[in-house]
Image (cartoon, rainbow, N blue to C red; front, side, top):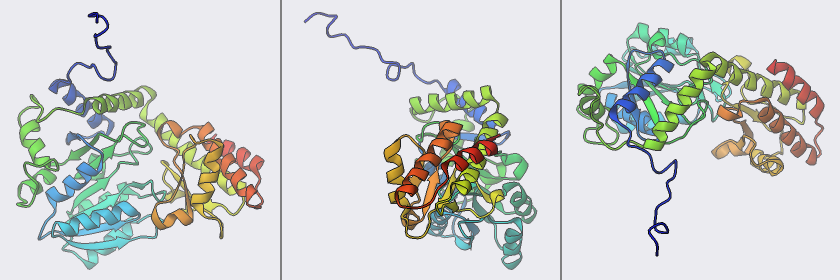
Length: 374
């Protein structure tokens, strides 16, 4: 066997130079600029559930009274984590077809002035709604509670501004509107949140969930040496996502997502066949994904499966759990925030509805979607 035949072929994804601490820190700085924040930004080496759970377990515990806003399934998960930490949890549940209001938050504070922690999802891709964080942030700041925000779905599709909104813990992920991988995420942390963690004897330490470990071993040490080997491919992909947004301009990227949402909503209304927006008011609809309610007798999961037979690459999915019977999701985020993805999804849904004997108008859907995009 010759030396040439045993040589290892290089691969652009596998044979990479090590990611230096300086490079890692530079990606954190770019994420901070994307969020327009002066808070510390920590990039976590895992899917966004890692910092979402780590931030709650770091800042909440016995003695915490948390207002947990539920506008979708993630809000329910946050309530479970808070209770598991020993916090007293006051759930503010809002119908999944709507958004929470600042007035509802203010009323909760008036009824429970002891609230010192608020958890909220910005945009619920699973249910298609988005919450007015800027207005809510003013109320939370006036009350003095710590403000925790899941902005995983919203970042890239709509403004996410932790400093301007008074958000103490803002978690983002790359896998939706940023158009990147699911294996890396980030959290911005205010000084108030660090202080709360440092005073919490139940905050995770020497743990993958520990934000305090990152603070002490990475931030406080001057970001000179990484605590462990980084997820290199995911870090490079995250950097590429931010570069792409910077090059296009964040406002253009957000405008594209707004256009996709408006076009999908208008096209679905024009299509007919009994489809209607799941989120009642357009102002409450998230630009990252549009959810649709199927007509009586039509199972959403079956309709989506039939539509995907036309083109498996379309960004269509049924709702999760019990919602699989009645909800369709058009996930027009990232690379799917395009005219083609929206028009293709509407056409496939129209054909699937027509097969079930329902009257649809695909020409009207196409025309109204295009007009709404403009």
